[in-house]
Each structure stands twice: as C-alpha cells, then as structure tokens.
Image (cartoon, rainbow, N blue to C red; front, side, top):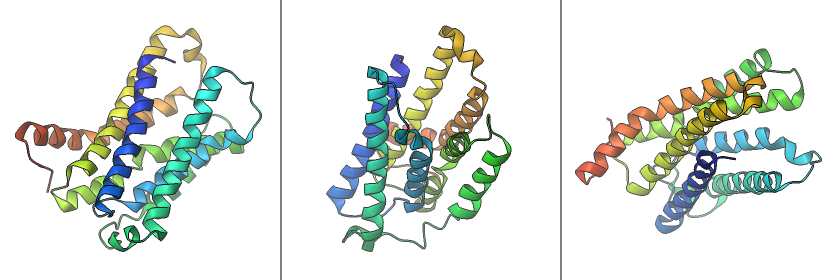
Length: 223
C-alpha cells in the first residue's frame, strides 16, 4: 500500500466524519441526497461481499477488513438517519432529491456488469457492478447542489472529500502501474481506470466552484 492509497482512505473516512458532523450539528439532512447515500451503501455491500469468504490474514487484510466494515456501517447508519430517525427524516426533501437512481444508475450498471466483466461469476459480477455504480453514485448529490445553487460549507466539504479521495486513488493506480510488475497482469484494471476517470471527471465542475468559493470567502456554486 502506497501513500496515495492510505491518504485516499483517510480522506474517505474524513468525508464520513464531515457528513456526520453536518447531520448532528444541524439535526438536519437538508441539502443532502439520500439517493447518493443509498447508492454508496449498495456499492460497499456488493463490493465487500468477500468479507464473508475465508482469508489468509495479514496486516493488509486486517486493515482492509476494518475499512470495509467502517464503510458499510457508516453508510448504513446515514441511510437509517435519513429514513427512520427523527428529526432528520422530517428534514429530508424527497421532491428535490428527484434523480431516478434505480432507473438511471442501478439498472444500467447491473446490465453493464453482466455484459462487461473479467469473469462471469457472482463475486466478480457484483464487484464489477460496484465499480460501475461508484463512478456515478455522486450524481444525485451534485444535481441537488446545482439545484440549490448555494450550499453550506459542511455539505461542500463532504463532497470535496469524496472527490479528493477519488483523485488520490487515481494517483495510487498510477504509482502502482509504474512500480508493480504484477499490476499490469491484472485484467480488471481497465475497468477500474475507466470508471475512476469518469467519477473524477464528474467532480471537476464542483472542484472549480469549491476552490472559487474558498478564494472569495463565500459559497459560490453553479446555478
């Protein structure tokens, strides 16, 4: 594991911290997309199905296992707050979070995973599905931010952390490509690279306005 992978993981954890801070301090989920959170929960559950399989334990396997459990648990907790926990569920504006994630995210990614995968097994299809789905899971949140036109800092910081995590993972892949001989032999890498590039590209517009907001000292986001 290189420094880019570790830094990406830490920023990913920071995104959960920022999100929980926003939710608990404001006792509200206004401006947040439940559909993005549900998509991420589905990503983690399908990708980390290998938690149920036997492992040859090492420090890296232990580290990965801890991170996987944190991601699933944190995402499930967030979705629970949105759907069932008062007062948070009363502040969720379903009519504004209107992206049809089942029709335009889950279904297309499932079909694509069945058609384009490295191996036609349940584990590999679920893993491939999770890679495709993660690439576009942020879309409902970005659309919601665009509708608001102006969003408070903690929500913006949460999205920025997610984008930074993905950017660091791209650097991680580049480093591994240049330094690991066996990395080239993995036939699934092109799926990861293309999906990762698409995901990072989705954040570019947000990054521009986020940096502009910090420079100007006030929230400036696209209308």
